[in-house]
Image (cartoon, rainbow, N blue to C red; front, side):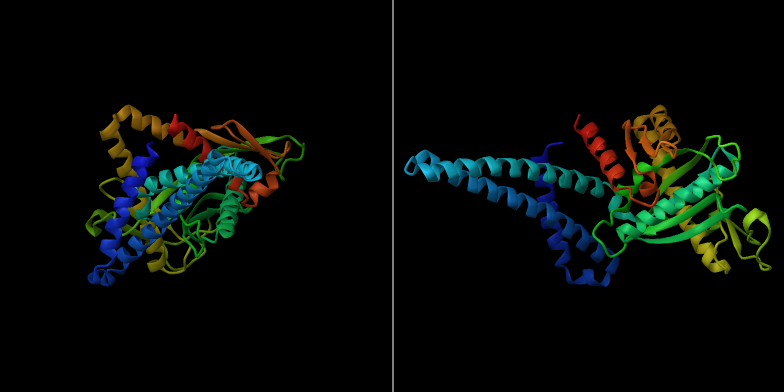
Amino acid sequence: MDIKAGLESIKREYSELLNQLSDPELISNWDKFEQLSKRKAKIEKILEKEKEINEINNKMEENKLIIAGREDQDLMSLAETEISQLTEKKKNMEKDLESLVRGSQEIEEGNHNIEAVIVEIRAGTGGEEAALFAANLFRMYSRFAQIKGWQQKTLDSHATELGGFKEIVFEIKPGSGEDNDIYSFLKYEAGVHRVQRIPETEKTGRIHTSTATVAILPKPKKTEIKINSGDLRIDFYRSSGKGGQNVNKRETAVRITHLPTNIVVTSQNERNQLQNKENAMAILEARVLRKKEIEDTAKLHGKRKAQIGLAKRVEKIRTYNFPQDRVTDHRIKKSWHHIEGVMDGKLENIVAALSGQDKKQELA
């Protein structure tokens, strides 16, 4: 990516944003005003970083003039030392600027239209142990969301008698912190997660291997995707608890079928139909958008490429090995220890490593 060209594009966009934000009629469209204001704040961080680099360049030029003057040996020595320090500082800041510009362009490609992220975790192979692992992953992402200051809400779940989950679907929304581009942090989590440990129910001490799948679905803003009510079949039924027994006398659980795509979603966590229907619609919108993205990719790049992309999402991406206190991400062939910390939501190092590898591949 040409950083200079990227900066020029960002500056043109910034000028256009200022024009739009100065329009007095914009205040009547609060959603658009908020979106433009957030984008303006992100761009200003980039422009401030460029300004700091320019200031370093000016200081370096001043020191070069001192050295070229050859009037004071001590002053020349200080100037040479400062140039060395400034060169290293400039190098690091240019990397930061490149990262900001790249991230800004990724956001502009569509992430700014994401209202939230929906995470779906399903137990895979391994029976009850897989369900317990799904519950562990749910707690891990919940703790990560808490650390980041994000808001979380469970949309649907199917628990087991031992406290695991056959399936759990939850939504993560931005909070009051700065790290609110949720999708950029969680997009690397999609795929098959594998656990190797001795289950509590195992009496012989044998290590079991189980799996769970994670799907990360961007939830679009209402303006991004339209679903016609005539395309929906909505059924109500009694919600079930651990082991499948009915827990409500009233039919509060909701099942929605999107007829054009045959996508089926459910929600049963709330005690009233309306809230469960809203939760189910949130899941449906995210899944319909994902299906549309996959179809668009197939049209643009050919069916085979789209199929390869789908296959990647269901590949084994990470192993949590409890006996060896090790978490290994197979995509970047890197391992981390202190597995309990990772399961408690301390994912920053893993996310940073995956993001760094992603950027290297893009540069290559």
